[in-house]
Amino acid sequence: MVLSYYRFEIDLDPDPLGLETPNEVFGLPALVAASARIDDSANPGSLPNIFVPGTGAPNTASLDGLSTSGNPDANASADYSSILDVDELTAEMFVRTEEQVGVLIARSTSTNVLSGISDGFRIYDPNDLKVQFYTEDPFGNVQLNQISTSAGLDDLSQPRGDGNAQWRHVAFTYDQTLGIGQLYLDGEVIGSATAGAGSSLYWGLESLANQRTLDVGFGLDGFNFSKTASDNGYIDEVRISSQPLTEAEFLLPESRHYGLILALVALGWVISRRKCQA
Image 1 (cartoon, one colour):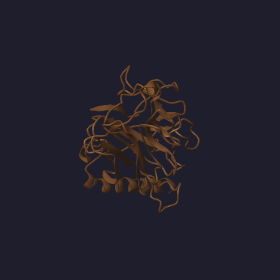
Image 2: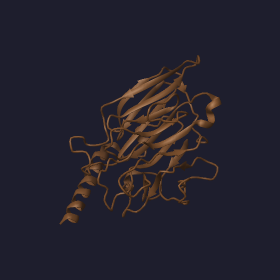
Image 3: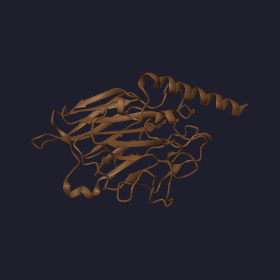
Image 4: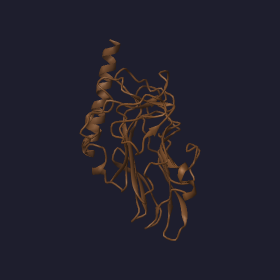
């Protein structure tokens, strides 16, 4: 079951207090952000359509910083009514950034998820991807679990800010039955942590329920990765489901084709840039 899905296609209400999309229904979770915007200025658009199978709709925009100068942090968030108080889940999104420090997505009562969390989960450090998530075992014991990797979103063999940042798919799954959390990059498992069979995700004290927020792009920008007229923002297609999905169920083309797709997209960008410089 899909709990929240933020496609970032169009801002129906340009007021900075809300980022509405056609997929969001009145009374259900909606992202709010005073420092983010939906960027649909590019032509032909944001992610290639093949990156988002099964949506039945084109992808033409993505989440960006509010200012038109540089790449300011997005710092988008959803209000506490986000229906994420579940025992297990999958959180997935497309991201591109050369930044070292930042939170891709988090759900917690903590007010500064860049510094850490006291409940819930966060995916952070985009170029040394990590996950922290809290669980509670059947006896009421709460513990913090950590997944740490050296895998990153950017090709760090190239200079930062070289315009080399490409869209990557990141996903975190937690399986309550097995008590295992897994972190994926482009459909491949890059790290895992075991909390204990039967342990459920822990979302904090019920007395703090009205402080639970879903943060997207907290302290995150693109580190000036030279966006062009055919580029939009740096976060897109954020989907959260109430069960641990398999790779085949992600918002991702078949894995055996994904590397080729990324290579073709990168080649097209290089050719386009050379034509512009000619």
